[in-house]
Length: 412
Picture 1: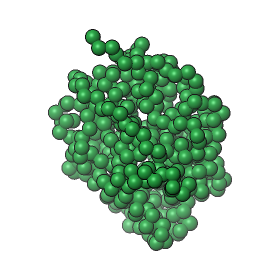
Picture 2: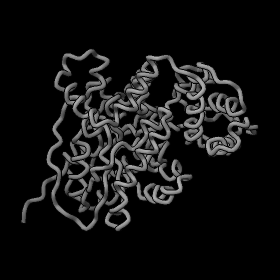
Picture 3: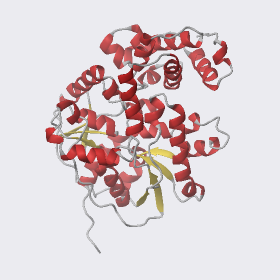
Picture 4: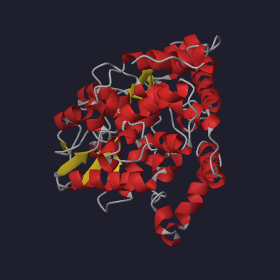
């Protein structure tokens, strides 16, 4: 697809990158068949191909409108279209550029702008934890819509204290420690049982995704730089073999640090190193499974697995988690239909676009519930919380189930 950039974009990094991405698009429409919002709405402008044309028009100098903004806002950034695309169009990068440009040209209504500001400032804030604890303490009194965003409090359990020669850094995340602290603790216990020590850099915080995807790109980059600074001493000394993500939404962002900071003269090289060291927890499962052979007592019954979009489309990691968990004795099953489609969580999407997020959730749960599972597992805190708001079946991180299935080792 050829485009003639408007003068204001010709010599900018975003303009050059967008033009390079647009050249790959051949207008085939394969992406439309796997776009969740197109499936719901049936509007060409609510599919990747239509959004690409909207962005192209803006880059060529056409003034965007509130309608342009609305169609770009409705995109989940699930990147299913990237998996489908035969030309390798990096749609996720293009839509980030397009949204930022449109937001700079189209003012938002005051309430809408205030909500987006609250999300990008509040979720990564140190105040989020106390606010979540307060919400959990009065959860039974909350309105249904707010209650759905506040998971019931669950204890985290003990963090292991043993040292091992193999060490990894774990990103605790911005909302996960408050919403589901057991995920990080279970990760540390499972890795400890496999002979791997989990370290956490206290200064590392939000991965930067919340700000970046709400069009505060510089704010997101600042958080990325802060995380690199927090991890760099141990990385530079060679003390850790990987930076592990147990939230796939964070994982896809940290893997992208090298791209986002490629033009930063101070951080480009370090960002590329951090991205290269980043691993989803599921990528360690072959080592974990080998180390835990004979030490896992998997419960009976079907466990339905929802692979997050950020894992299967963003990070291109498919099949490994369910394969390894089956080898450990779990009856893990994928939904028979649409296991590739988004559940509607998508970071802040379920707050900003509830009229689309909840039908996608219910559609996903309909497929998962056909398996009659005793539990549903996923690999991302957003998916877990969003799915749990629509079902009485427990929805958890797969590492929590593995942690509970470990058979304790008798002391020598």
